[in-house]
Image (cartoon, rainbow over all chains, first blue to last red; front, side, top):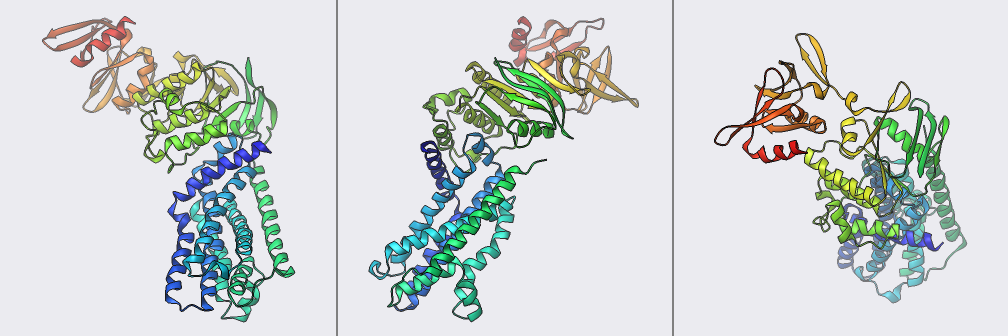
Length: 240
Length: 308
Protein backbone atom coordinates (compact mmCIF):
# COMPACT_ATOMS: atom_id res chain seq x y z
CA UNK A 1 0.00 0.00 0.00
CA UNK A 2 2.84 2.33 0.99
CA UNK A 3 4.63 1.50 -2.26
CA UNK A 4 1.51 2.18 -4.29
CA UNK A 5 0.99 5.56 -2.56
CA UNK A 6 4.61 6.50 -3.29
CA UNK A 7 4.16 5.77 -6.99
CA UNK A 8 0.81 7.60 -7.10
CA UNK A 9 2.46 10.69 -5.62
CA UNK A 10 5.31 10.49 -8.13
CA UNK A 11 2.83 10.18 -11.01
CA UNK A 12 0.84 13.07 -9.48
CA UNK A 13 3.88 15.38 -9.63
CA UNK A 14 4.74 14.19 -13.12
CA UNK A 15 1.21 14.79 -14.43
CA UNK A 16 0.93 18.14 -12.65
CA UNK A 17 4.07 19.35 -14.42
CA UNK A 18 2.84 18.06 -17.77
CA UNK A 19 -0.60 19.65 -17.46
CA UNK A 20 0.74 23.02 -16.30
CA UNK A 21 3.17 23.11 -19.24
CA UNK A 22 0.33 22.41 -21.71
CA UNK A 23 -1.73 25.55 -22.31
CA UNK A 24 -4.32 23.59 -24.32
CA UNK A 25 -5.25 21.64 -21.22
CA UNK A 26 -5.48 24.74 -19.03
CA UNK A 27 -7.85 26.56 -21.38
CA UNK A 28 -11.04 25.47 -19.61
CA UNK A 29 -10.07 26.51 -16.06
CA UNK A 30 -8.56 29.78 -17.30
CA UNK A 31 -11.63 30.47 -19.42
CA UNK A 32 -13.93 29.84 -16.47
CA UNK A 33 -12.03 32.37 -14.34
CA UNK A 34 -12.09 34.92 -17.15
CA UNK A 35 -15.78 34.34 -17.75
CA UNK A 36 -16.73 34.77 -14.10
CA UNK A 37 -14.58 37.90 -13.68
CA UNK A 38 -15.99 39.56 -16.79
CA UNK A 39 -19.62 38.80 -16.01
CA UNK A 40 -19.11 39.50 -12.33
CA UNK A 41 -18.12 43.04 -13.25
CA UNK A 42 -20.89 43.53 -15.81
CA UNK A 43 -23.79 42.04 -13.87
CA UNK A 44 -25.51 43.97 -11.15
CA UNK A 45 -25.15 41.94 -8.00
CA UNK A 46 -28.15 39.74 -7.52
CA UNK A 47 -29.53 36.38 -8.37
CA UNK A 48 -27.75 36.31 -11.75
CA UNK A 49 -24.41 35.88 -9.94
CA UNK A 50 -25.36 32.29 -9.13
CA UNK A 51 -26.10 31.60 -12.79
CA UNK A 52 -22.74 32.93 -13.95
CA UNK A 53 -20.83 31.14 -11.24
CA UNK A 54 -22.56 27.90 -12.18
CA UNK A 55 -21.60 28.42 -15.84
CA UNK A 56 -18.03 29.09 -14.76
CA UNK A 57 -18.13 25.91 -12.71
CA UNK A 58 -19.52 23.91 -15.65
CA UNK A 59 -16.69 25.22 -17.78
CA UNK A 60 -14.13 24.35 -15.12
CA UNK A 61 -15.46 21.09 -13.70
CA UNK A 62 -17.26 19.47 -16.63
CA UNK A 63 -15.35 20.81 -19.62
CA UNK A 64 -11.99 21.07 -17.86
CA UNK A 65 -12.24 17.68 -16.23
CA UNK A 66 -13.24 15.87 -19.42
CA UNK A 67 -10.72 17.72 -21.57
CA UNK A 68 -7.73 17.39 -19.25
CA UNK A 69 -8.19 13.68 -18.64
CA UNK A 70 -9.06 12.70 -22.21
CA UNK A 71 -6.34 14.77 -23.86
CA UNK A 72 -3.60 13.83 -21.41
CA UNK A 73 -4.37 10.12 -21.80
CA UNK A 74 -4.64 10.40 -25.58
CA UNK A 75 -1.36 12.35 -25.70
CA UNK A 76 0.40 9.62 -23.72
CA UNK A 77 -0.92 7.00 -26.15
CA UNK A 78 -0.04 9.08 -29.21
CA UNK A 79 3.51 9.85 -28.06
CA UNK A 80 3.95 6.33 -26.64
CA UNK A 81 5.13 7.55 -23.27
CA UNK A 82 2.95 5.19 -21.25
CA UNK A 83 4.90 2.06 -22.09
CA UNK A 84 7.96 3.01 -20.11
CA UNK A 85 5.79 3.91 -17.12
CA UNK A 86 4.34 0.38 -17.18
CA UNK A 87 7.89 -0.98 -17.48
CA UNK A 88 8.86 1.13 -14.48
CA UNK A 89 6.36 -0.94 -12.47
CA UNK A 90 3.67 1.75 -12.40
CA UNK A 91 0.33 -0.03 -12.69
CA UNK A 92 -2.61 1.41 -14.67
CA UNK A 93 -4.45 1.99 -11.37
CA UNK A 94 -1.55 3.97 -9.93
CA UNK A 95 -1.29 5.97 -13.15
CA UNK A 96 -5.00 6.84 -13.22
CA UNK A 97 -4.99 7.77 -9.52
CA UNK A 98 -1.94 10.02 -9.89
CA UNK A 99 -3.28 11.65 -13.02
CA UNK A 100 -6.76 12.12 -11.54
CA UNK A 101 -5.28 13.69 -8.40
CA UNK A 102 -3.34 16.20 -10.47
CA UNK A 103 -6.44 17.19 -12.48
CA UNK A 104 -8.56 17.27 -9.33
CA UNK A 105 -6.06 19.60 -7.65
CA UNK A 106 -6.08 22.06 -10.54
CA UNK A 107 -9.87 22.09 -10.84
CA UNK A 108 -10.53 22.39 -7.11
CA UNK A 109 -8.09 25.29 -6.80
CA UNK A 110 -9.74 26.97 -9.80
CA UNK A 111 -13.18 26.42 -8.27
CA UNK A 112 -12.05 28.15 -5.10
CA UNK A 113 -10.69 31.06 -7.13
CA UNK A 114 -14.05 31.40 -8.91
CA UNK A 115 -15.84 32.42 -5.72
CA UNK A 116 -14.01 35.72 -5.07
CA UNK A 117 -13.48 36.18 -8.82
CA UNK A 118 -17.24 36.25 -9.26
CA UNK A 119 -17.66 38.82 -6.52
CA UNK A 120 -19.26 36.30 -4.18
CA UNK A 121 -18.59 36.44 -0.47
CA UNK A 122 -17.43 33.20 1.16
CA UNK A 123 -20.28 33.43 3.70
CA UNK A 124 -22.81 33.21 0.87
CA UNK A 125 -21.87 29.63 0.09
CA UNK A 126 -21.23 26.54 2.22
CA UNK A 127 -17.58 25.90 1.49
CA UNK A 128 -17.68 22.29 2.68
CA UNK A 129 -20.58 21.42 0.40
CA UNK A 130 -18.98 23.41 -2.40
CA UNK A 131 -15.76 21.40 -2.13
CA UNK A 132 -17.55 18.06 -1.83
CA UNK A 133 -19.70 18.81 -4.86
CA UNK A 134 -16.66 20.02 -6.84
CA UNK A 135 -14.57 16.98 -5.98
CA UNK A 136 -17.31 14.46 -6.81
CA UNK A 137 -18.35 16.13 -10.07
CA UNK A 138 -14.72 16.59 -11.12
CA UNK A 139 -14.09 12.91 -10.48
CA UNK A 140 -17.03 11.94 -12.69
CA UNK A 141 -15.75 14.30 -15.42
CA UNK A 142 -12.29 12.77 -15.15
CA UNK A 143 -13.72 9.27 -15.53
CA UNK A 144 -15.70 10.37 -18.57
CA UNK A 145 -12.55 11.90 -19.99
CA UNK A 146 -10.62 8.69 -19.43
CA UNK A 147 -13.29 6.77 -21.34
CA UNK A 148 -12.84 9.18 -24.25
CA UNK A 149 -9.04 8.93 -23.93
CA UNK A 150 -9.04 5.13 -23.82
CA UNK A 151 -10.98 4.79 -27.07
CA UNK A 152 -9.00 7.55 -28.86
CA UNK A 153 -5.69 6.71 -30.54
CA UNK A 154 -4.51 10.34 -30.48
CA UNK A 155 -5.33 13.85 -29.28
CA UNK A 156 -7.14 14.88 -32.44
CA UNK A 157 -9.60 12.00 -32.21
CA UNK A 158 -9.96 12.58 -28.46
CA UNK A 159 -10.88 16.18 -29.19
CA UNK A 160 -13.47 15.15 -31.76
CA UNK A 161 -15.04 12.41 -29.62
CA UNK A 162 -14.89 14.60 -26.54
CA UNK A 163 -16.82 17.44 -28.16
CA UNK A 164 -20.32 15.93 -27.94
CA UNK A 165 -19.55 14.64 -24.45
CA UNK A 166 -18.48 18.11 -23.33
CA UNK A 167 -21.47 19.65 -25.08
CA UNK A 168 -23.88 17.40 -23.22
CA UNK A 169 -22.39 17.89 -19.79
CA UNK A 170 -20.91 21.39 -19.95
CA UNK A 171 -22.94 23.35 -22.49
CA UNK A 172 -26.43 21.85 -22.50
CA UNK A 173 -27.09 22.59 -18.80
CA UNK A 174 -26.62 26.30 -19.56
CA UNK A 175 -29.83 26.21 -21.59
CA UNK A 176 -32.00 24.52 -19.01
CA UNK A 177 -33.66 27.80 -18.10
CA UNK A 178 -34.86 28.18 -21.69
CA UNK A 179 -36.44 24.77 -22.21
CA UNK A 180 -38.41 22.43 -19.99
CA UNK A 181 -37.18 19.41 -22.00
CA UNK A 182 -33.58 20.41 -21.54
CA UNK A 183 -34.28 21.04 -17.88
CA UNK A 184 -35.67 17.52 -17.50
CA UNK A 185 -32.71 15.90 -19.26
CA UNK A 186 -30.08 17.93 -17.48
CA UNK A 187 -31.57 17.42 -14.03
CA UNK A 188 -30.55 13.76 -14.29
CA UNK A 189 -26.92 14.56 -15.10
CA UNK A 190 -24.20 15.24 -12.56
CA UNK A 191 -23.49 18.64 -14.08
CA UNK A 192 -27.15 19.54 -13.73
CA UNK A 193 -26.93 18.78 -10.03
CA UNK A 194 -23.81 20.95 -9.79
CA UNK A 195 -25.70 23.84 -11.40
CA UNK A 196 -28.64 23.32 -9.09
CA UNK A 197 -26.33 23.30 -6.05
CA UNK A 198 -24.78 26.64 -6.99
CA UNK A 199 -28.11 28.24 -7.83
CA UNK A 200 -29.75 27.11 -4.58
CA UNK A 201 -26.68 27.97 -2.46
CA UNK A 202 -26.61 31.54 -3.73
CA UNK A 203 -30.34 32.10 -3.47
CA UNK A 204 -31.95 32.97 -0.18
CA UNK A 205 -32.39 29.23 0.53
CA UNK A 206 -29.52 26.91 1.44
CA UNK A 207 -28.67 23.68 -0.28
CA UNK A 208 -29.55 20.36 1.36
CA UNK A 209 -28.30 17.06 0.06
CA UNK A 210 -31.30 15.09 -1.20
CA UNK A 211 -31.55 11.34 -1.75
CA UNK A 212 -32.15 11.85 -5.46
CA UNK A 213 -29.12 14.12 -5.88
CA UNK A 214 -26.85 11.76 -3.96
CA UNK A 215 -28.26 8.77 -5.85
CA UNK A 216 -27.75 10.46 -9.21
CA UNK A 217 -24.15 11.30 -8.40
CA UNK A 218 -23.47 7.75 -7.16
CA UNK A 219 -25.01 6.24 -10.30
CA UNK A 220 -22.92 8.46 -12.57
CA UNK A 221 -19.77 7.72 -10.60
CA UNK A 222 -20.28 3.96 -10.53
CA UNK A 223 -21.38 3.62 -14.14
CA UNK A 224 -18.45 5.64 -15.49
CA UNK A 225 -16.02 3.77 -13.24
CA UNK A 226 -17.32 0.36 -14.30
CA UNK A 227 -17.27 1.33 -17.97
CA UNK A 228 -13.71 2.61 -17.59
CA UNK A 229 -12.55 -0.60 -15.88
CA UNK A 230 -14.13 -2.73 -18.60
CA UNK A 231 -12.59 -0.64 -21.39
CA UNK A 232 -9.16 -0.63 -19.71
CA UNK A 233 -9.18 -4.40 -19.30
CA UNK A 234 -10.26 -4.79 -22.90
CA UNK A 235 -7.45 -2.53 -24.13
CA UNK A 236 -4.82 -4.24 -21.99
CA UNK A 237 -5.87 -7.70 -23.10
CA UNK A 238 -6.15 -6.75 -26.77
CA UNK A 239 -3.67 -9.03 -28.49
CA UNK A 240 -2.89 -10.64 -31.80
CA UNK B 1 24.36 -16.83 -15.27
CA UNK B 2 21.49 -17.15 -17.74
CA UNK B 3 19.09 -14.24 -17.64
CA UNK B 4 16.41 -15.30 -20.09
CA UNK B 5 15.71 -18.45 -22.11
CA UNK B 6 13.61 -18.59 -25.23
CA UNK B 7 12.67 -22.21 -25.84
CA UNK B 8 11.43 -22.68 -29.44
CA UNK B 9 9.14 -19.69 -29.11
CA UNK B 10 6.60 -19.43 -31.90
CA UNK B 11 3.88 -16.87 -32.51
CA UNK B 12 1.81 -17.58 -35.58
CA UNK B 13 2.59 -15.24 -38.50
CA UNK B 14 5.24 -13.34 -36.53
CA UNK B 15 7.87 -15.55 -34.94
CA UNK B 16 8.94 -19.07 -35.67
CA UNK B 17 11.05 -21.35 -33.52
CA UNK B 18 12.94 -18.59 -31.76
CA UNK B 19 15.48 -20.42 -29.60
CA UNK B 20 18.04 -18.42 -27.65
CA UNK B 21 19.56 -18.03 -24.21
CA UNK B 22 20.91 -14.68 -23.08
CA UNK B 23 23.56 -14.95 -20.41
CA UNK B 24 24.93 -12.28 -18.15
CA UNK B 25 27.55 -9.98 -19.73
CA UNK B 26 26.87 -11.29 -23.21
CA UNK B 27 27.25 -8.65 -25.94
CA UNK B 28 24.44 -9.80 -28.09
CA UNK B 29 22.77 -8.52 -31.21
CA UNK B 30 19.78 -10.15 -32.84
CA UNK B 31 18.67 -9.38 -36.37
CA UNK B 32 14.88 -9.27 -36.45
CA UNK B 33 12.38 -7.13 -38.29
CA UNK B 34 10.44 -4.48 -36.39
CA UNK B 35 7.31 -6.67 -36.31
CA UNK B 36 9.26 -9.67 -35.03
CA UNK B 37 10.94 -7.58 -32.35
CA UNK B 38 7.63 -6.09 -31.20
CA UNK B 39 6.11 -9.56 -30.99
CA UNK B 40 9.05 -10.86 -28.98
CA UNK B 41 8.85 -7.92 -26.57
CA UNK B 42 5.10 -8.38 -26.19
CA UNK B 43 5.65 -12.06 -25.39
CA UNK B 44 8.31 -11.25 -22.82
CA UNK B 45 5.96 -8.75 -21.21
CA UNK B 46 3.19 -11.37 -21.29
CA UNK B 47 0.76 -9.28 -23.28
CA UNK B 48 -0.23 -12.55 -24.87
CA UNK B 49 0.97 -16.14 -24.92
CA UNK B 50 3.12 -17.76 -27.60
CA UNK B 51 1.52 -20.25 -29.96
CA UNK B 52 4.24 -22.69 -29.00
CA UNK B 53 7.36 -22.81 -26.84
CA UNK B 54 8.07 -20.90 -23.66
CA UNK B 55 10.00 -17.98 -22.28
CA UNK B 56 11.78 -18.46 -18.99
CA UNK B 57 12.78 -15.13 -17.54
CA UNK B 58 15.27 -15.76 -14.74
CA UNK B 59 15.51 -12.17 -13.67
CA UNK B 60 12.83 -9.76 -12.43
CA UNK B 61 15.02 -6.87 -13.42
CA UNK B 62 14.51 -6.58 -17.14
CA UNK B 63 13.86 -3.38 -19.10
CA UNK B 64 12.73 -3.09 -22.67
CA UNK B 65 13.17 -0.04 -24.89
CA UNK B 66 11.07 -0.09 -28.03
CA UNK B 67 12.10 2.03 -30.98
CA UNK B 68 9.00 4.18 -30.86
CA UNK B 69 8.89 4.76 -27.09
CA UNK B 70 8.39 8.46 -26.52
CA UNK B 71 9.67 11.04 -24.08
CA UNK B 72 7.89 13.90 -22.32
CA UNK B 73 9.15 16.53 -24.71
CA UNK B 74 8.07 19.60 -22.72
CA UNK B 75 9.96 18.55 -19.61
CA UNK B 76 13.54 19.43 -18.83
CA UNK B 77 16.05 16.58 -18.86
CA UNK B 78 16.87 16.83 -15.16
CA UNK B 79 13.22 16.98 -14.09
CA UNK B 80 12.44 14.00 -16.29
CA UNK B 81 15.28 11.93 -14.90
CA UNK B 82 14.35 12.93 -11.34
CA UNK B 83 10.90 11.42 -11.81
CA UNK B 84 12.33 8.09 -12.90
CA UNK B 85 15.04 8.24 -10.29
CA UNK B 86 12.30 8.47 -7.66
CA UNK B 87 10.33 5.66 -9.30
CA UNK B 88 13.47 3.52 -9.30
CA UNK B 89 14.17 4.52 -5.70
CA UNK B 90 17.73 5.26 -6.74
CA UNK B 91 19.96 7.66 -4.79
CA UNK B 92 22.36 8.30 -7.69
CA UNK B 93 23.55 11.85 -8.35
CA UNK B 94 22.16 12.72 -11.78
CA UNK B 95 24.86 15.32 -12.42
CA UNK B 96 27.61 12.76 -11.86
CA UNK B 97 25.93 9.98 -13.80
CA UNK B 98 25.08 12.27 -16.74
CA UNK B 99 28.73 12.23 -17.83
CA UNK B 100 28.47 8.51 -18.64
CA UNK B 101 25.72 9.36 -21.09
CA UNK B 102 27.27 12.56 -22.46
CA UNK B 103 24.32 14.58 -21.19
CA UNK B 104 26.07 16.70 -18.58
CA UNK B 105 25.50 19.89 -20.59
CA UNK B 106 21.89 19.11 -21.45
CA UNK B 107 20.35 18.68 -18.00
CA UNK B 108 18.63 22.07 -17.97
CA UNK B 109 17.38 21.84 -21.53
CA UNK B 110 13.93 20.78 -22.65
CA UNK B 111 13.82 17.31 -24.10
CA UNK B 112 12.29 18.61 -27.35
CA UNK B 113 15.52 20.54 -28.03
CA UNK B 114 17.72 17.43 -27.84
CA UNK B 115 19.12 15.72 -30.92
CA UNK B 116 18.06 12.16 -31.82
CA UNK B 117 21.33 10.85 -30.37
CA UNK B 118 20.79 12.71 -27.10
CA UNK B 119 17.24 11.38 -26.85
CA UNK B 120 18.51 7.81 -27.26
CA UNK B 121 21.18 8.48 -24.63
CA UNK B 122 18.47 9.86 -22.34
CA UNK B 123 16.46 6.66 -22.76
CA UNK B 124 19.57 4.66 -21.93
CA UNK B 125 20.16 6.82 -18.84
CA UNK B 126 16.54 6.41 -17.81
CA UNK B 127 16.79 2.62 -18.03
CA UNK B 128 20.07 2.51 -16.14
CA UNK B 129 18.42 4.25 -13.16
CA UNK B 130 16.55 1.01 -12.47
CA UNK B 131 19.82 -1.01 -12.32
CA UNK B 132 18.36 -3.80 -14.42
CA UNK B 133 20.18 -7.07 -15.01
CA UNK B 134 19.18 -7.03 -18.66
CA UNK B 135 18.08 -4.37 -21.08
CA UNK B 136 16.70 -5.09 -24.52
CA UNK B 137 16.81 -2.23 -26.98
CA UNK B 138 15.34 -2.00 -30.43
CA UNK B 139 17.29 -0.28 -33.16
CA UNK B 140 18.73 2.63 -31.16
CA UNK B 141 21.18 3.85 -33.82
CA UNK B 142 18.97 4.01 -36.90
CA UNK B 143 19.98 7.02 -39.02
CA UNK B 144 23.00 7.89 -36.86
CA UNK B 145 26.13 9.24 -38.42
CA UNK B 146 29.47 7.56 -37.72
CA UNK B 147 30.33 10.08 -35.02
CA UNK B 148 26.95 9.66 -33.36
CA UNK B 149 27.29 5.87 -33.50
CA UNK B 150 30.66 6.12 -31.74
CA UNK B 151 29.18 8.19 -28.92
CA UNK B 152 26.29 5.78 -28.46
CA UNK B 153 28.67 2.81 -28.53
CA UNK B 154 30.66 4.40 -25.71
CA UNK B 155 27.50 4.88 -23.68
CA UNK B 156 26.45 1.26 -24.18
CA UNK B 157 29.93 0.11 -23.17
CA UNK B 158 29.67 2.27 -20.04
CA UNK B 159 26.49 0.53 -18.92
CA UNK B 160 27.92 -2.87 -19.83
CA UNK B 161 30.92 -2.05 -17.65
CA UNK B 162 28.43 -1.37 -14.83
CA UNK B 163 27.34 -4.99 -15.07
CA UNK B 164 24.17 -4.47 -17.10
CA UNK B 165 23.70 -6.92 -19.97
CA UNK B 166 22.51 -5.17 -23.10
CA UNK B 167 20.93 -7.11 -25.96
CA UNK B 168 20.16 -5.16 -29.12
CA UNK B 169 17.59 -5.90 -31.76
CA UNK B 170 17.67 -4.44 -35.23
CA UNK B 171 16.82 -5.22 -38.82
CA UNK B 172 20.23 -3.84 -39.82
CA UNK B 173 23.31 -6.02 -39.38
CA UNK B 174 25.57 -2.99 -39.76
CA UNK B 175 23.96 -1.39 -36.72
CA UNK B 176 24.37 -4.58 -34.69
CA UNK B 177 27.98 -5.01 -35.71
CA UNK B 178 28.92 -1.70 -34.12
CA UNK B 179 27.78 -2.73 -30.66
CA UNK B 180 27.95 -6.49 -30.32
CA UNK B 181 30.38 -9.33 -30.52
CA UNK B 182 27.74 -11.98 -31.30
CA UNK B 183 25.07 -11.44 -33.91
CA UNK B 184 22.19 -13.85 -34.43
CA UNK B 185 19.85 -14.00 -37.39
CA UNK B 186 16.91 -16.20 -38.40
CA UNK B 187 18.15 -18.36 -41.29
CA UNK B 188 15.95 -21.20 -42.61
CA UNK B 189 13.73 -20.99 -39.57
CA UNK B 190 16.55 -21.20 -37.03
CA UNK B 191 18.35 -18.55 -35.06
CA UNK B 192 21.95 -18.78 -36.26
CA UNK B 193 25.14 -17.12 -35.08
CA UNK B 194 26.43 -15.06 -37.96
CA UNK B 195 29.91 -15.11 -39.37
CA UNK B 196 30.67 -11.41 -39.64
CA UNK B 197 32.74 -11.92 -42.78
CA UNK B 198 30.04 -13.61 -44.83
CA UNK B 199 27.01 -11.61 -43.88
CA UNK B 200 27.66 -8.41 -45.64
CA UNK B 201 27.91 -7.76 -49.37
CA UNK B 202 27.69 -4.67 -51.52
CA UNK B 203 25.96 -4.74 -54.84
CA UNK B 204 26.79 -3.15 -58.17
CA UNK B 205 24.88 -3.06 -61.42
CA UNK B 206 27.01 -2.99 -64.55
CA UNK B 207 26.45 -4.04 -68.17
CA UNK B 208 23.06 -5.55 -67.31
CA UNK B 209 24.63 -7.71 -64.66
CA UNK B 210 24.33 -7.63 -60.90
CA UNK B 211 27.54 -8.09 -58.93
CA UNK B 212 27.99 -8.68 -55.19
CA UNK B 213 31.24 -8.01 -53.40
CA UNK B 214 32.37 -8.76 -49.89
CA UNK B 215 34.28 -5.84 -48.35
CA UNK B 216 37.57 -7.75 -48.38
CA UNK B 217 37.40 -8.04 -52.19
CA UNK B 218 37.32 -4.26 -52.67
CA UNK B 219 40.65 -2.43 -53.01
CA UNK B 220 39.19 1.02 -52.67
CA UNK B 221 36.13 3.08 -53.50
CA UNK B 222 36.44 6.10 -55.74
CA UNK B 223 33.95 8.83 -56.55
CA UNK B 224 34.04 9.53 -60.28
CA UNK B 225 31.76 12.30 -61.58
CA UNK B 226 29.65 12.03 -58.46
CA UNK B 227 29.15 8.27 -58.71
CA UNK B 228 30.88 5.89 -56.33
CA UNK B 229 32.82 3.02 -57.87
CA UNK B 230 34.31 -0.10 -56.29
CA UNK B 231 37.77 -0.99 -57.54
CA UNK B 232 37.92 -4.79 -57.61
CA UNK B 233 40.76 -6.63 -59.37
CA UNK B 234 41.64 -3.71 -61.67
CA UNK B 235 38.02 -3.09 -62.72
CA UNK B 236 35.58 -0.41 -61.64
CA UNK B 237 32.02 -1.24 -60.59
CA UNK B 238 29.53 1.55 -59.98
CA UNK B 239 27.16 1.66 -57.01
CA UNK B 240 24.11 3.75 -56.12
CA UNK B 241 25.39 4.39 -52.63
CA UNK B 242 27.03 7.70 -51.84
CA UNK B 243 30.53 7.97 -50.42
CA UNK B 244 29.11 8.88 -47.02
CA UNK B 245 26.82 5.87 -47.01
CA UNK B 246 29.67 3.60 -48.03
CA UNK B 247 31.89 5.10 -45.36
CA UNK B 248 29.26 4.30 -42.75
CA UNK B 249 28.79 0.74 -44.01
CA UNK B 250 32.45 -0.10 -44.51
CA UNK B 251 33.79 1.53 -41.38
CA UNK B 252 33.69 -1.79 -39.53
CA UNK B 253 35.38 -3.68 -42.34
CA UNK B 254 38.71 -1.87 -42.26
CA UNK B 255 37.94 0.94 -44.68
CA UNK B 256 39.11 4.50 -44.16
CA UNK B 257 38.04 7.77 -45.81
CA UNK B 258 41.48 8.98 -46.81
CA UNK B 259 40.19 11.66 -49.17
CA UNK B 260 36.91 13.32 -50.03
CA UNK B 261 36.59 11.05 -53.07
CA UNK B 262 38.28 7.88 -51.80
CA UNK B 263 37.62 5.12 -49.31
CA UNK B 264 40.60 2.81 -49.00
CA UNK B 265 40.81 -0.77 -47.72
CA UNK B 266 43.46 -0.48 -45.02
CA UNK B 267 44.51 -4.11 -45.59
CA UNK B 268 45.57 -3.20 -49.09
CA UNK B 269 47.94 -0.37 -48.15
CA UNK B 270 51.61 -1.13 -48.64
CA UNK B 271 53.12 2.35 -48.48
CA UNK B 272 52.43 5.99 -47.70
CA UNK B 273 54.20 8.31 -50.11
CA UNK B 274 54.96 11.98 -49.99
CA UNK B 275 55.37 13.05 -53.57
CA UNK B 276 55.49 16.75 -53.07
CA UNK B 277 55.33 19.21 -50.25
CA UNK B 278 51.97 18.58 -48.52
CA UNK B 279 50.95 16.00 -51.12
CA UNK B 280 50.53 12.48 -49.88
CA UNK B 281 49.39 9.27 -51.43
CA UNK B 282 48.81 5.61 -50.63
CA UNK B 283 50.27 2.83 -52.69
CA UNK B 284 48.28 -0.37 -52.58
CA UNK B 285 49.31 -3.99 -52.79
CA UNK B 286 48.75 -5.90 -55.99
CA UNK B 287 50.24 -6.05 -59.49
CA UNK B 288 48.99 -2.62 -60.50
CA UNK B 289 50.26 -0.82 -57.39
CA UNK B 290 47.23 1.49 -57.45
CA UNK B 291 47.78 4.94 -56.03
CA UNK B 292 45.14 6.67 -53.95
CA UNK B 293 45.43 10.27 -52.76
CA UNK B 294 45.64 10.92 -49.03
CA UNK B 295 44.45 14.18 -47.48
CA UNK B 296 47.19 16.04 -45.69
CA UNK B 297 45.01 16.24 -42.55
CA UNK B 298 44.56 12.48 -42.40
CA UNK B 299 48.20 11.43 -42.52
CA UNK B 300 48.68 11.07 -38.77
CA UNK B 301 45.42 9.25 -38.29
CA UNK B 302 46.08 6.69 -40.99
CA UNK B 303 49.56 6.06 -39.64
CA UNK B 304 47.98 5.42 -36.25
CA UNK B 305 45.41 3.04 -37.75
CA UNK B 306 48.04 1.12 -39.68
CA UNK B 307 50.15 0.67 -36.57
CA UNK B 308 47.26 -1.05 -34.72
